[in-house]
Length: 188
Length: 327
Image (cartoon, rainbow over all chains, first blue to last red; front, side, top):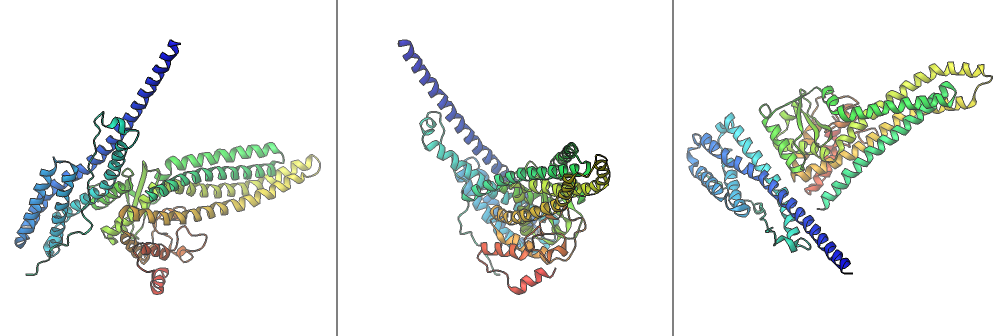
């Protein structure tokens, strides 16, 4: 009799252990997906940081009257690089500010026909547009996988083990607010 | 979320249709082989031999198209692979769209031709190729190019490429085999009849089979082509919808369709066996009857109207439709 009870207890313990292992693996997999999606964005963000000084240097000579716009871009880039260590939420804010200043720069560049004939500037502009697009397309995958992961660790059954094994919530990489900044137009 | 479920369903339904297509073509060919063989040799064993031959040929054709079809299509269209260095913008746009479509980066090819057009091919998203003409690169701006590439990657993600690859070769194959049977049957039909006569009196069953074989051989290619056309038209609407889902911008694709629709160049490398692959039908003279059951693509004006309704612009005016149909 005692033997049977022992067996049953043992069976239950083994079963519980298996369930915990399965849940744990599921969470690890989701977290991995979040990390992968993040690294996709991160590569593009770094690439953009590397491209911007080149563009600023390339256009500086042409745009004597737009030093302020260029300074804004350089400053926003420095902020974004600094925010790199502070996690997706802060980074998103700094990167969105950078996107805004870049937009104003591109808008102002339209006024300089010489720039549009410069092959180097054109290819830098193309590279920056594609990085920006890739950031925004990667963002939706990242946010979807974060949503999936955050939901999993906050709902039954995984919620019981999430805290125990240190699975914590991840931040979304927020898009800039819908009302995009209209580039400033100055008539001089 | 709803849209991804629908697209998942679409993928599954495309895979199902690919299988169904293969099975029905196999059965059709088997029946044709049996009827032709029976009719020609006058005994059921002859029929079985022909059936076996037809099925083996069908399997060879299907597997050949599955594994090598994309290379054949690319070679037939004289598409050359390109690199990041030679075509940075094109490669960038394809990379962006493959991120948005969540498929691996396909191989990218360019066709030396001033007629703007594009196609995608391959057996699955891992083995996919996208080809665009030099005319497309010259005539479209970045936003429009993005729309076209998104449409092609829509075909990739929805598994249309596999279906279109198989159906293209299968339709060609059915026509080829039917033709072969027709010639063969008449050739052997005479000999078989003589042998039957030697046994005393013609076999009435043999004549019936001969008639069945001839009817099948005539109808099979037509039926196969009709299926191909109707499926192909639906895929185009779906790929347009996928493109908007990826780019979140119907205007680029809409303008691309308009520009390509009003372009008068003729794509020289396209022919009847590859026309269903392209972004818009490359065979201009077939466009006039675009709404007929033989068209591989829906009428351009209808595709544009569907896109316009997405950003609450009204449909094209009669004049605009007239410009498109005057190609």
